[in-house]
Length: 289
Image (cartoon, rainbow, N blue to C red; front, side, top):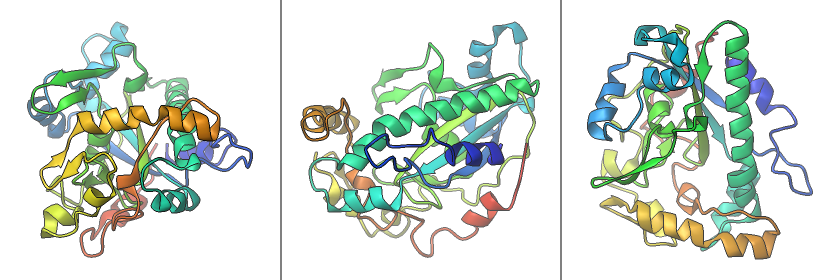
């Protein structure tokens, strides 16, 4: 699977679709989580019962399989990092997304969907039932009293389970490639050794939580949606939606974005020094499927 994801990322679909035909994403990371990982039950308690477990998501796509053994399932997750050029543009921004960032949000996510479909196709061609949960008809968000809008399948929480990173103050996932990333996943009826998680704390890679310092993402947020108390999803979402007219007027396509909290911060392109021992080795030292 790692080889397939890397090959697809090197292909012609991974593009910003602008005049320069630049790559949307850099080299990916891939990790694996066991379908019966206790974290998935914990997510139902912590995030809410609406959040799908891997077996639930696969059953929605393949009801003909009947009762599924979660121990025979794997969640395959990947991290798609913003390119150095996109990050550099974003660091200079103070209110609206630069064109590269807006393109990565729209066209880069279209590629992410392509990646999901191709991974599913490859697995099923090899005889393994598979599904990309965020592409299922029932996928969406649920309005919760505790967290506001909450997804039925959180790519961030899947990547956390797969050893790919921990959460920051702004709710973004801080990975060995940083926080300026997009995430994707597929669940499949195939047993793959899980990627070790070199952390127990969900905020292990965030300087604010780990050391009581930083807070740079608070200063970067143009919406006032970040504070020491965390991330106001509704303020954030409203601001991102309000960028649509700007993107259309300045860049000539229907899009939106922000992501300023992901750049110009110590965790932009990696785990802050001293917080991520063992993180890269656990991801790159294993080949699977």
